[in-house]
Length: 159
Ligand code: FES
Ligand code: FES
Image 1 (tube, protein in one colour):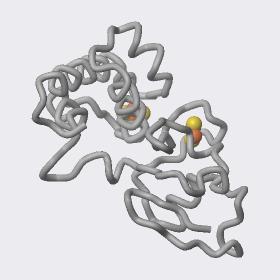
Image 2 (cartoon, protein in one colour; image 1 turned 60 degrees about the horizontal axis):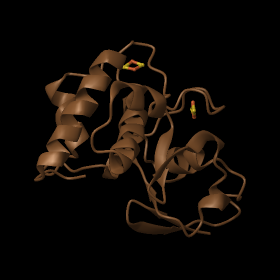
Image 3 (cartoon, protein in one colour; image 1 turned 45 degrees about the vertical axis):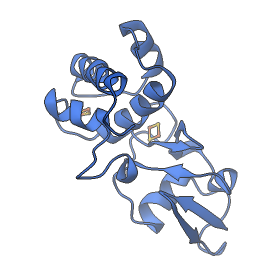
Image 4 (tube, rainbow, N blue to C red; image 1 turned 90 degrees about the vertical axis):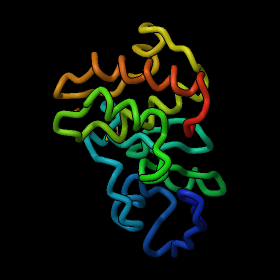
């Protein structure tokens, strides 16, 4: 199958990548994109969140066959070193991560939220970001999302 990830098309032989293989396995073990994390494997924690067709999905329960022909974006392509996403700038400003394990999933979920809502309230954030953080970084995540939203509303940063 052909899989488009971060703007690049990969031809994956079915012998190695059957259509029912979770997208997360393909990203990490076949394409070596290890920024996306494995937490629970049952769609409960959000550590594995990536974008498919611009929407946040939990890749641990997404069979790769269902995303064929749809663009996949992982944390590796959220921003670049020279052009970070507004969320990445805000994450640094607020020093959000502790252990960091949940953070790529948090950022991808937050990016989906900000693509739909450039001025989210606390309630909007709590409703949209259902990812789990064992380190309890939720208050800083909330503040960073609001800072990123402000940056996006003012223009001049990558979305
Ligand atoms: S690893 Fe996918 S939701 Fe936890
Ligand atoms: S920063 Fe450690 S789990 Fe979230």
